View 1 (cartoon, each protein chain N blue to C red):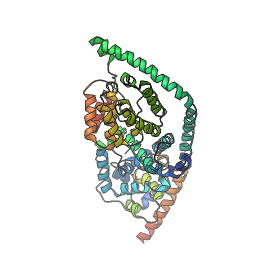
View 2: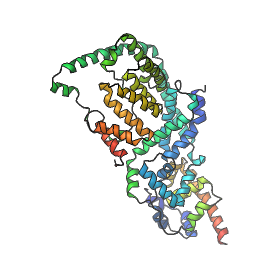
View 3: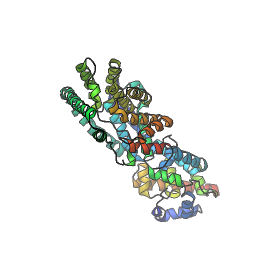
View 4: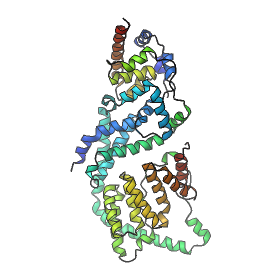
Length: 155
Length: 301
């Protein structure tokens, strides 16, 4: 039977990753991940270890559902907004951003959040878990990659 | 989504030139995406955790907006979705801190083994007195005795899983035959429940329900422990058994937690049925039940 420390080491990152994908906020993912492992700690003796790691993800998912149920602002937004993208054709920058093979996911995320969603560096840092300096660096590098690609295409 | 105006206005020269190279203006980009859901919703849309209506709208949006769809995929990349060093340290610190408190609490186990049975006896006496009082009270006094715990609860509490405190009806402590043994067994089974060790509590309460199949209390707290262990289907079975034993003191709790368990399994019909029962009869859990029922029927907060 694995100890709590072993289970924590093996599953903490996947649980956080999964939770972040469920709630989209790192601070909330951090809280839920802590709660999941505290619950595991309290129930380690009575828990059938064959249920792991599924049990951890189920707890995380239920907590994520609880979280969303209480996000009234988001809900009101979703009810009121049409959530339809603009009908006009995609500008070349947006198309290249999605299709470019030279960009890594981290570059695309920084570029999208900055130029499509209008976020500040601080907001991007909070969303991605990077420092502002790292965000700035990724943006500079990604812009250069796209420029180079753009020049090649237009030549 | 709430887009930061300053985010677009504070472009540096390199950024302005970059947009100029691609013959696009910041305003145009902003207008194109001002109807897009937030990154949080974009991520949540792929995880089967959003409330139905939002989930449908977000999914529909992602089908028609390649930029948001790409953002959702990219945000799931481990380089972004994994916890950074600071986040890992904070999670570890919180668990270490709270687990140390737990360990310290476990060290007092010897005290629990003495205090809890004594508490049960005290509660038994109080319960018996209350029960006697209720049987002999005038109708108006009777209404006062069963006065509902009312008052609007904050919306945040609807469907939030909270552990009900241990309440022991007098009947459970006046067990026909072997009273003292039952009290002892019950105290032993509820001891891990009291310190949030639901795995151990479920195991002990399961044994208890085998020995005392007519104990509504045992079935009820077993059901609650199973909800905390995410064994919602088992919890429903136990709570239904508890309900069938007609224990008045825990009746409203049983409806509420049964509704909660149904809701967690996605069974809205039965969840609403239980909630309506509480909502239609003023008393404890009425406010939550009415709000919960409205929520499950698709009402808004």
